[in-house]
Length: 582
Image (cartoon, rainbow, N blue to C red; front, side, top):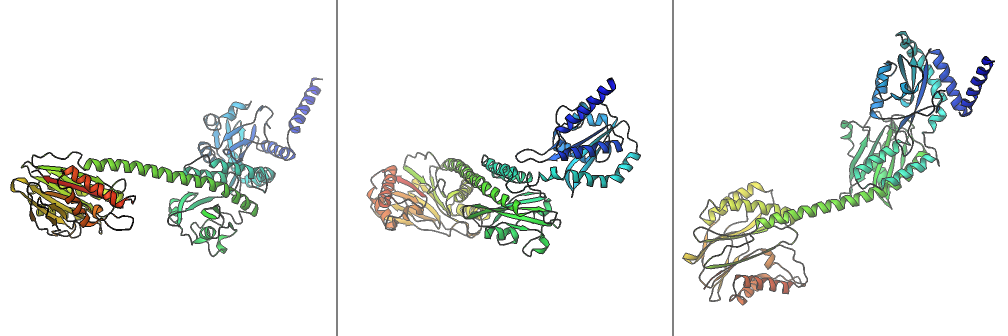
């Protein structure tokens, strides 16, 4: 009776187990059971390589819960450690303690019977992983490997055939759940604003639903209207160097210009195809469009012929449409971040430039001083210096760099540093300017230059010694109402390294006024495009000659504002005023 009860219980367990399996699963189970018996193994497990849309790749026990003593399914994340372990132990013995300390450690913990050794055998189709068998043995003699290696190619074909239905579920037919999952993934990309992250996520998302070996993403540069290579998968560094294509080059260029996707079943038969890797046999290229505008192209490549079909193409086009939104948002965010960083840099540059210009002017018993500087942008290319020497003489200079903004500010800082170094070594104004020019010419690029006015006010001798490198004429208004223009005494700085400059002297007596300025003053325009000009400047100085230096400076600025009204100044403005006390 006990024997009959045991047999009935066994039949009941078998019926219960098989009733939970599909027909294809029953066939595969039977195959595995026979395989276990043929190899005289204690244990035979199969782990199916699963790449579900929206989830990480994994190895899942197949059929689920099929060993009688397993009360739950086993899923192993396809981590790099697991891949490394599997590939390094293909058809080779694995000791029980080695498996227990490996990414497959869950297996010895779940099986009821201990095994001395294990054997791992991969199952592949066209070099694509479908999964792997894990067999457990009481002992594993060397001749077992020769036996398995000999018969396995035929057994693998049977296994692949039985797994065909399961494997096909990883392919992407039209209007399936995979399509919806992929579109959800594309929408999920919109949650990120980092361009590099989105491009990487794009390729990873595609890997989950379309089989390919290599991928590349190009975006079209909005300024140059050319391709910018952005991301590649599956290519060696040597090949990546060849991926910089022009907009009118190759299939990728054609897809970008035509705005249409294209499947190439055999790249050797497509004249427009540009070979970058000889192993590639087929390719699909899809435009990434924003409205009617193509903003990029992604291409998927395979080492197999005819690897892509029309159903996949339709799905990839839908994916590209969703991905384009994420890419456009990322680009806008990138531009905003770059602008914000540039604004921060400009603010720092502005502070540095202000520090280079004097906050306080020296106080002299005989000479009253005032200065003003305003760049047309956040930073500018004008500079000035007002320094009282130990002798009581006052050094006064104004410079103007060709170029505005950041580039002008950088050259301004360079010229300022050279000038302040040289004033400690020289007495003669012309010799100083010659040395400044020599160093400045060695520093700048061809085509860059500066104008510069350098002077020394000598109150004890009632004179000004000056030297001018192509700068706007400074104005000396004498107490009697007459004025003199301090014209250039040499060419602009940076043009000729060995240029010579001459020194000139002009009288400067009590009641006289010296005004040095940059061309932003005389070239300021009104609404009729008339320039302020030298004549108006002289007239304005004469109107204010009874005022102190600050009053004269203020009158010049007020006159400029009244003249220009609502017109924004296109050039930096610098004014330095020195008045000899009566």
